[in-house]
Length: 439
Ligand code: FES
Ligand SMILES: [Fe+2]
Image (cartoon, rainbow, N blue to C red):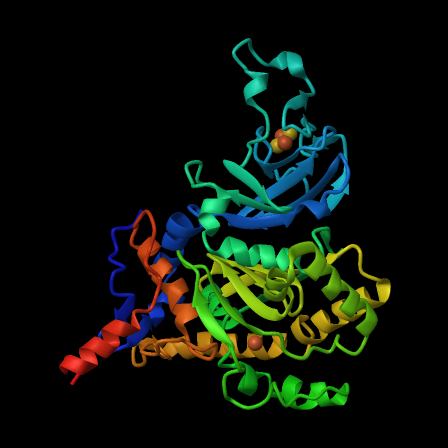
């Protein structure tokens, strides 16, 4: 624990409608250490999807919140999450990304564990005294593991609230994103794994930043979309998309949301897409089906999960150092759709968001550019995130959704427990203006 004072890292001025983040937030190793302890060790973190472990004996390995983990399904079908470290002398037990096994065995001295984590094999067993407690030498489970509709989250805080409480109002949005196209969704085999030389919070901002789209992704919007025969008129220009808005969903969760925009999918399987849409009306009723299907959303689940409905993707990331993060992303698609539509969805996902797609490299370049810019932080110490702060109805090109993240981040960085008010309060800006406080 550090006794450093983090209270000045964010300036949140509700009277003047100004919001600034000190750039040491992106560069200081003490901030990262504090984030690990006060944020990543105290939140629910997305780990995997149940569909990645379809059969008894299936396991995957993955780093979550800085720890290597094993997620495994036992013979009775229960999924557990263990720290991927041998209780003998620490060797990382499994090294493959996935597989199927009855016993998790360590190649260093060949201790073996069953899928419930119990120590079941110990070469030279008779060398240990009567005080060596085999039943206490099982694999160490993560303190908390919970599934929400197939999405598996872990927490290193045994006392954390349950997942549904944690999501708060964001839960309904997760439901919308999972209901779209039916409940029976699966992770498409394979993942996008990449890294960038940028602070992880830059990717939080970027993932819910509509302001940058027209400029950063001009090539995709102005050249690629017309090239594939799409009308791009709704996409281009710096104005906010009609009806789109940025929303704070409580405790750092946030989203961009608005009426569905044209997608490269639209012309490819019109009959199937129309049937899927009609089925939603029957299943959920017209009003709810409208909320589910006729909107696009980028949903941010604090602290490091993004769901993007346009590409049906989940993305998570974690800092290796203040200026370097690792990213993983997956496609989450309904099993019931035709191969043709699935192929089109994957193509759509890869052409924009793939690490070699037409947009992700633009974002990586912008975020790495920010990080390089922070080398001048002594002379240029602040980043500005004030956009739309005095507006009664923030637009998607405003930055309220980012401020929601930063408010929760700043509260947690200072060790605050309980809920955080992450909302703008435009009435305070207006009141201050009326009384001349800001003059
Ligand atoms: S470290 Fe695993 S058996 Fe020794
Ligand atoms: Fe982008």
